[in-house]
Length: 210
Image 1: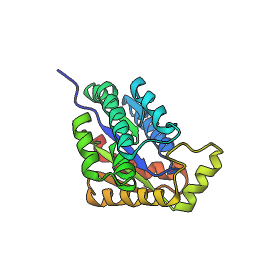
Image 2: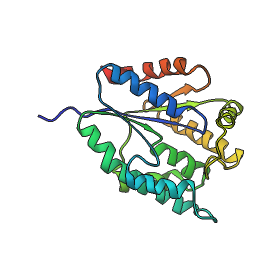
Image 3: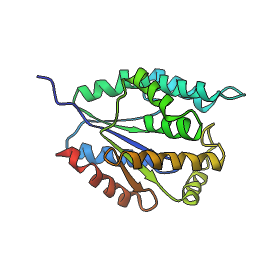
Image 4: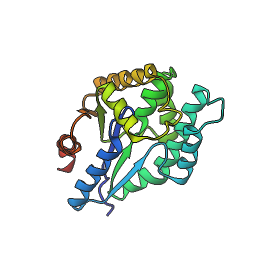
């Protein structure tokens, strides 16, 4: 008898929202409950997808056209889903992903002007339309998030380094996605002590543990 399907949690939000930290804290909490947890990221997570990540975050000098960028993200995701996410879920494991398709919908579809229909069509073709069981959307004041990014002291990649207007459009697109799917998304304030934010996230996924 095969194990029950695992659970799939995606963390979404703009730059500096603390997705990686909260993904790690959630994984630690779930493992403490005896669950097997895979923590991964997008773009990336598999050798093929990580190779595409390098192309996306350090693009050719002229950069990628918007359509090519969307196709590259979809290709990375298709490999990630086929080789890591679906197999883990079929083994009954929990998968926690730092970004998934809703990032493409917000960045390329919304701020990038490709449109949601094109992004969701690419996802339907490349990854059979796989959706997380719960999307945790971390949101926060623009200035506070910018301060977090600056405090890292790291060079911005090709997407982080885009204009403030672009990132405002991303935040607006995420908000619209969450409003349209209140059962699939949980919106959480990303500004505050990491452990306090983590407590809200644990509460947001509590029903999935039953």
